[in-house]
Length: 134
Image 1 (cartoon, rainbow, N blue to C red):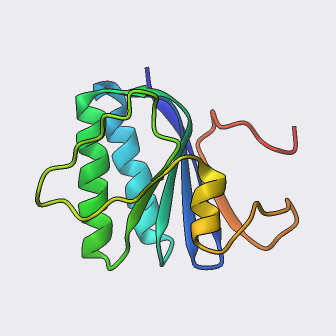
Image 2: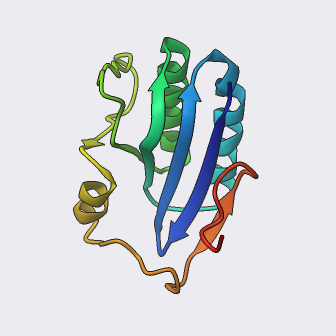
């Protein structure tokens, strides 16, 4: 089983939304999404896990590796709506990863609210991510 993702840039804030199960089979695709994020944005990145069903230990390691990669690019990673088990335990050498209860709280922490569909933003997504126009 794999994941689907959508990456949205609104002003200087990136939002990477992930859906599915972030397990060993999905780590490569997640890492590809992170590469996309690094190449196409600046500023902080909120990893929105609202649609994530769960994660494995390998998935959690991929998230901490993403935090390191983003930090090396001068950017930070924040999490929104982590799975119910809430068991992300980054290694001691990992940058701080703020955790928000949901996407609205993460946006509020950046002085933002939900955006309207016609707001100026850029967006990319996997083929499996639902198209909002449908």
